[in-house]
Amino acid sequence: MSLRVSDQNCEPRHISPLRDSFQRPMQDLRISVIDRCNFRCTYCMPEENYGEHYSFLSKNDWLTFGEIVRLTKLFVQLGVSKVRLTGGEPLLRPNLNQLIQHLGQLAGIHDLALTTNGAFLSGQAKELFESGLCRLTVSLDTLDEEIFQRMNGARGTVQHVLDGITKATSAGFRNIKINAVIQKNVNDGKLIDLVTYARQAGHILRFIEYMDVGNCNHWKSTAVVPSKTILDLISSRYPLIPIKPNYYGEVAERYHFQDGQGEIGFISSVSQPFCGTCTRLRLSTDGKLYTCLFATSGTDLRTPLRDGATDTELIDIIAKVWHKRNDKYSENRYLFQALTSKPTKIEMYQIGG
Ligand code: SAM
Ligand code: SF4
Ligand code: SF4
Image 1 (tube, rainbow, N blue to C red):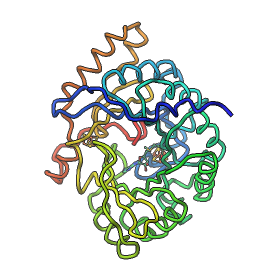
Image 2: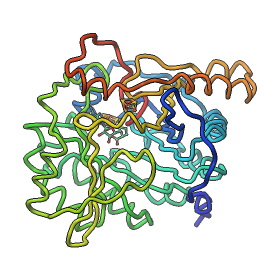
Image 3: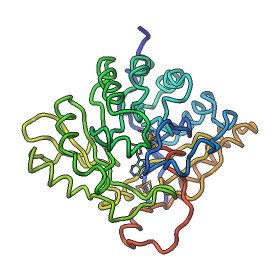
């Protein structure tokens, strides 16, 4: 068994991070390692827009592992201490464990996590753990096979995902998080099943409000099930006690079950936006830097990187972007319910969740 190199890095550390125009520190980096996905979730990559002839990035467009590691080192110098690998479906990126090994050895990263749809987890869980991945989040919106198929474009099965989670637990992952996006009249009727499963299996379930990411999921505010509605429903079956955030900028509101059997969380980006403490930046598969999930444009880092820019020059570009960052899309959505202009946004699968 290979050494879990990241063990010594999965610890908090203290440096003075770069602050944006609202004094928000740079802290969490999300790296999309691939723009392709084996699922076609209706709320993210609907089949009608991403059919078999859709042209995704070519391999030459992808940042190489060397480029990702080099940029990550620079982000760490500016304040980043948490890194999450995402996509598209990150487990489709060949040899991902090699990237994890390299990132796990970077001083200054105390949390290296990955979000996956779980379809390939069974076959990769052991390798991911042994490469030094600290934490795992698996997306699973329902345990109902028919609803699951309807939500993901009839790709993969619930059982595949559950098997993947079981394998991940056997491989050594602890406190696995399960992300569930809830849509009204789609999967809101089966919430308690998911809660019961997660409690019994010892996983941390987090409900994510359905968001208006990208340009093609036909989002309507009436399709959002507010966290409060879900909280009330769960509390009537399993009483809950609120608990404090783990760290500054944590997006989930956390609760313990009163009977002591585990934890649950709510990410309420629509009903209770948290832009005021948003510490996240996102690197797309082709090396563009985005400072908001709802951004309309990014800053190209790949071109200067491939043109021979020095570390100082790259840091200068990144620092300028963060200094002038003034994103607060979700707060504006909340304040001005129907946004009057409809700008073309980046798609979620291009920059990850
Ligand atoms: N493919 C991986 C997965 O699904 O876990 C990683 C990428 S996916 C874009 C990351 C997260 O974004 C998932 O948990 C997914 O449920 C969430 N997501 C995608 N579209 C969303 C939407 N419209 N509203 C809320 N969450 C969304
Ligand atoms: Fe793929 Fe994840 Fe988007 Fe679903 S949410 S289509 S699994 S990238
Ligand atoms: Fe952060 Fe943008 Fe989401 Fe606000 S809308 S919390 S700024 S990513």
